[in-house]
Image 1 (cartoon, rainbow, N blue to C red):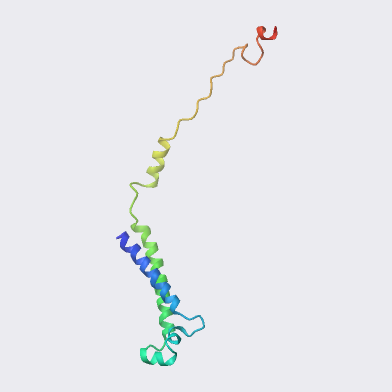
Image 2 (cartoon, rainbow, N blue to C red; image 1 turned 90 degrees about the vertical axis):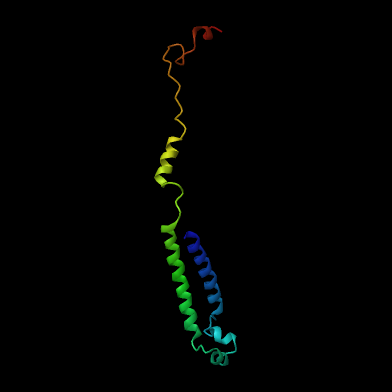
Length: 118
């Protein structure tokens, strides 16, 4: 199902690009590419601009809906994110141990008597 939705999104995106490229920015559109008004009489479509605009909006809405739908049908990665975070916390390295404090008077910072005699 997921592959089908992604394939439809790609198909809609390609068709959207083709429809947008078929439009003329100055309003002539598809009919001016085939020779103006004579082509519209031959083809039988009088308002290709309206058709292309409706197709553009339809493909845009279709891509948005399918993109949002992928959120609900995305295959799970073997567990929820909370499970992954819990396992990561359990595998974390233990906190480094602080060295034990030796409160002996000779090692508390004062030099020993033998060191001061030198």
